[in-house]
Image (cartoon, rainbow, N blue to C red; front, side):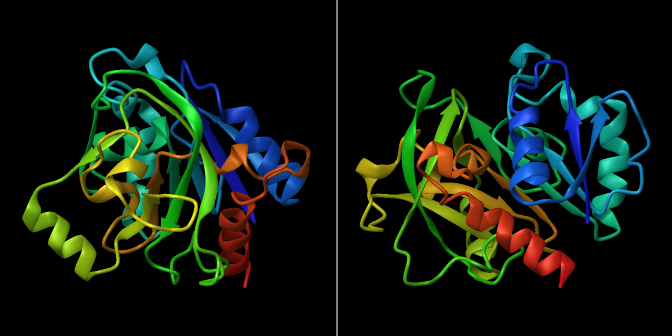
Length: 231
């Protein structure tokens, strides 16, 4: 299994992602510079978190036009797997590879803390190894623009087709207004495209995938990916 981690000017979670994939999950990983157009025969592409191009204009709005994104878009169109975390999710939205948009947090503040999320579909590439008995996952967030939005008609289609991956919840798995850290509509923390091969989420599973951090809830997502793709 060969993973490609795309690095943009301002990416700051690329090495965290590479460490988890290479050292924790024991997978082959290559770094892909944003000006390249070659995905180097990778089986899976990851867009990491950070502040691509300093978050000028909107988060992800400039990175969406980096040369490598044409290759990523073609790869996804042919059924290739793509996973975007935080800024990577914002880039996927800007590139229209997943539906919706990410706006400023309702309190207009950068938020960095642990939150709880609840899987909404256990049959996707990133959730298939999560037990239904696990009521919530503790995963860190670190963003200023994580307020997910989409129109009512699109949301209905996404709910009906299983495109909502995660919702913010409390530790007991209750999806409440109080457990929503950024104002995201319907508490949405992650989504996928209609083909279910492109995935985006605001929380950082790579920051919760090592025993040294006293939290391995995020590792379940990587186990899901490796389990399904290499099966």
